[in-house]
Length: 161
Length: 210
Image 1 (tube, rainbow over the protein chains, first blue to last red):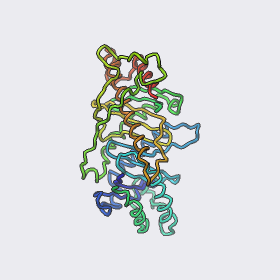
Image 2: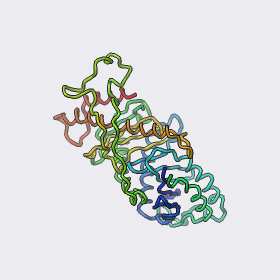
Image 3: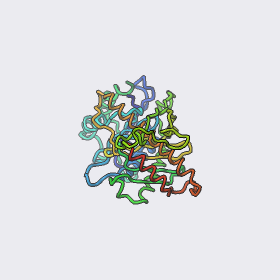
Image 4: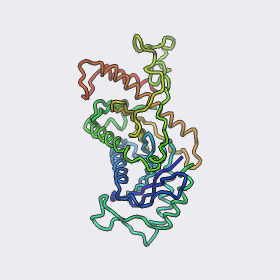
C-alpha cells in the first residue's frame, strides 16, 4: 500500500486542506496546502461530485441504506472517499490495489479532525468567510499545527509500505 | 457476481445500449436518467487521466496492464445448472472454439475510470481500443471489513479477481457486439442497438455468469 495525496473539502466545495507526497521514499517530501485553487483539486472535486450524483440515482431507496462512494479506481491509482454528514469530504489517493481505507479516513475525521479542528475554539466554524468564498472560491485553509503533525504521524507509515 | 445492468457507451458519450437484468435499484430509472448517467461516466472517464498524482508522474513505474484470461466466464459450459450440454462442448461457430478468446489481453483502459465501488454496488468499466465503453453494474460490494492495518491478502486478491472476471466478461460482451451488432447490415454506427439477437445473447451470457 502506498498513498499519494490527501485532501479535505468542505461543504462549499472549497479544498480546505491538501497534502501531497512527491517522493515516496521520503515522507517529509511534498507539498502542504498549496493546491487549493489548483486545477487538480477542482478536477478531483468534480469527479467525486459527478459520481456521487450517479450513485445517488442508482441507489435502492427501499432498504433505506445510504449509497456513498467508497472508492474510485483507474488503471494507475485509486481514490478513496469518506463523506461526513456535515458535508466534509475526506479524500485519499492511493495505489490501485483494492484495499479498504474507509476506516483510515474515518479515524482521520473522528480522532484527528474533530479533536483539533472542531473542538478547537480558535478554529473557524466555517472556512468560507464571506458569500464570495463559497462555491469553490475559498482561500482559507487548515493551518493548525497539531492537526498537521498528528495527521503526518498517522499517515507516515502508509506512505510507502 | 450478479450483473444488474449493462450499459454500452459510444465514443462520443452517447448511450447506445442499456439493459436491466433484475428488478433492482436501476429499474426505477427512465431512459433519460440513463442517458445522463452515461454521459456523466463518459466525462468523468476523461477527467480521471488529468489527476494522476505527482509521485506517479515522477516514478514512471510501468504498471502491468495485461489482464489474465479467465476461462469460460459467462459461457454455457461454465453453468452447472445446464447439465444437458455437459458432455458435448458448445461451439460458438464453425471455426470458433468453445470460448471467444483464450489468451490474456491488454487493457486499453489505461488512465480512465475502471471501477467504482459504493456501499451498494460495484461498477466496472471496460474500454475498447476504438473508445467504446462497456459498463457493468454488479450488486457485489467491495468488502468493507477487509481491515485497515492488518490488510488481509486474501480479500484483496478476491477483489482483484472480481475486476479481472469483470474485464473478461465485458470483453466477451464486446465479442458479442462484434458478432451481432457490427455484422448487422442494417445497423448504423453510433446509433442505439435495437438487435433482438444481441439482446438474447447478452441475456444468456449474464445468466450463465454465476
